[in-house]
Image (cartoon, rainbow, N blue to C red; front, side, top):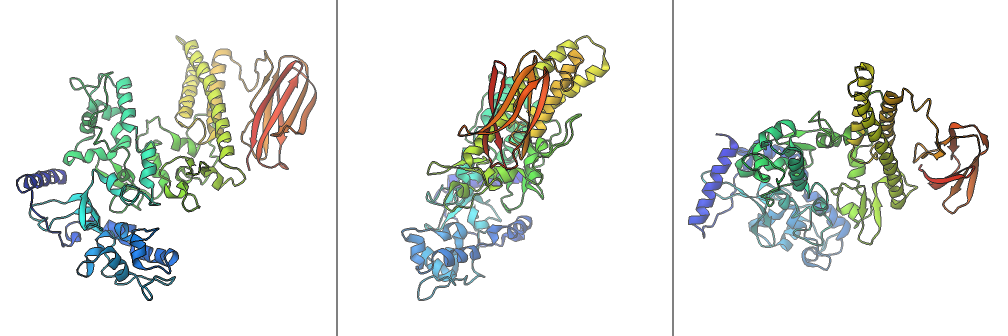
Length: 571
């Protein structure tokens, strides 16, 4: 009998007791949990949950000096430290109120906290122990399993919770205290990790897996592993295929074009416990839905790469991690444009201004941009690029995405044309070249950020696909012998740039050419070119070493042709 079957039996017994003895009162267990749950206890000892008293003492000394214990609990700016830092501490010393607890466990002078306040009776302080989050009855060892609940220190009772994430949100969100500055769960609920995952999976099952069984889907594309890994813990423990069957409708055992979500109230999304082992949430962990065990990593990159890269599933098309690493393309040099920068540096950036959402969300919105309460916006980009603001960061990203969209559109057309061109062909060289072009195109699109995670590398991948597809059809390399039929001013590359960038333009005929650079106020900064040029593809470099970061414009005038484009200098 495995542990999931045992848990299921205990749950049935517990429900039967509630049914036949509804007024039964369970005395709280005083057992040493480590005797039976040693592994979990050892993990807990390594976590912040097992070391909370000094945090409270330091905060009292820094923020509450000159105030009495009751002001902390009931004052104008009350902050109920006990409720989240050690709810069961009220049971110490024969039982106390929260105010008494604050006076018993932290030093005061003449009844007031001071800047020297320190922890008292440390051997009695229970931290956030097992019974903070588990309602464990006294007869737990003989009949009754514990239930997931939060101990409510103001009422000295347990409050039931819907799931593990709701439990975490009592203290790491506004579920219990609307005015708290710990709002990770609030951010999570607004993120893609916290909503929309079930609809996404249902849409994919209906579009791509109609006629397939849950087992067949798991064998080819394990949706559960990344979209709701902890769902396999429901009902005492189920398989990944069972989880798919539980959460998405089937007809005669197979998914159809009409497949929709079901049991949405139980779907956990990418929950807190998907990335945090609840007994040591500080440890970087990934819950493996296949083994039902946590895998521990030394780097957050490895954690992100399980689902946003091919670290767990080599054939996945979610490849942001790989693109950021700048390796894996065929015939394209490796290029990591932000060495040393991890996913979490941009997507879990935490600000340094107290009271802002950038701080309170704790990175759990996973967005590079955070809307503040005053209407302003914070951007993780500005932590490294101090010369720009959030608005400029938006413009830079939009520029990257627009360039990616344009190149991706050309690449799709060219590669499709090359594919059609080779139908029935036995030219193994060109067939192999087409496969490389198709791979690099799919790899670039697998980034799913529109070229933002590694703009230079994804641009190289798309250009390689375009050049190979063009060669297949024409025998001409775009980089060497482009066919010029019209005036064209290309987007500068790279863009943004520091301190120099390349500007290319095409001339279908001999023309007098002038290229000027302007700042955002329309003031001309320099003239890059002002002379007659032959027909063909031309390249010119703009060096901005002496200019400040910002938005600039370059204008080409050639005969009757005139065009202006935007570029961004980013230091």
